[in-house]
Structure formats: structure tokens, C-alpha cells
Length: 83
Image (tube, rainbow, N blue to C red; front, side, top):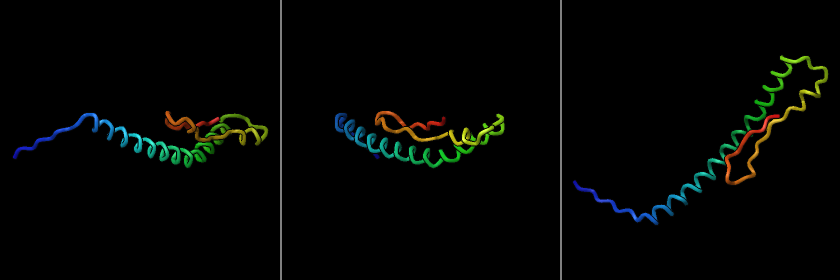
């Protein structure tokens, strides 16, 4: 059995760019969604860690810790900010 494959490089590269762009967008949305779901748990863990390691006088100090997803730049992957 003999198999012959011929690829038009310009058309193949264009198709790959289209697939890559669609795939990249789906991955970015999925990553941002997963990070947003985990942000609540991470924020709680950070608050617990700080409360156990420091003498916290005011509980508002612990409530000041936040976590949110940064995903406004379309050329970069999302990031989780904890601060």
C-alpha cells in the first residue's frame, strides 16, 4: 500500500492559524473561568494563613485580602491576582 500526501504550505499555515486562534480563545476562556472558581478558595486560604501566623486585632484586615482574575489583554493568558 502506498500513501501519498501533498500539503499546500500557504493553505495549511492559514488553516493552522485559524484553528490556533479558535483554540487559544477557548483555552483562555476556560482558564479564566477555572481561576475565577478557585479564587474564592485561594482567598479564604490566604486569610486563614495570615490569621494563623499574625496577631490580627481587627477582622477588617483579613477582609482586605482579595483575589480576582486579570484577563483584559487579548495577547496574554489570564492571571490570578491575590493581594
